[in-house]
Length: 171
Figure 1 (spheres, helix red, strand yellow):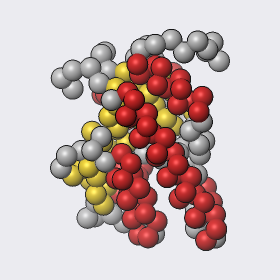
Figure 2: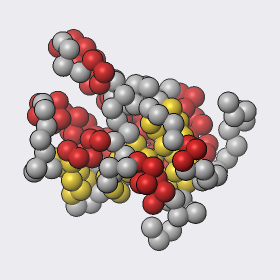
Figure 3: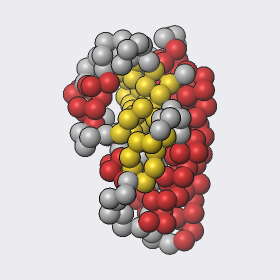
């Protein structure tokens, strides 16, 4: 990357998309998709207020390929187990994050974040597991998210990306 950027390193499954009950029944599938949409809307607001870009660290990256103008589309070679849900999720990600996506994981999120970390970028990682010890850097902040992005997480992420103190003690 040529200049400093704010980057969201984003996992989906069990992070902002509670897929643990996926395909268990129609009602829970509906609410899982709605929960994802709410989280994506929250992220779109974070992007708007911090001029952030998105790097998808999720295994969902295997289902997608980059398209022109920082967009994504279904990978022609996708071996999706359920094309209906993959198409729905792809549409929502594209709707809320399209135009801001700068890359897709190559399969190792720790290496992905290390490549993004050029010493000037501020990187916020939303994930359901904390690999902060593997990428120790003052420009990288991890937020453990287990299906929902809370107001506190968004507030702290925004303050970090904007370079302003959060006023909260680290936990």
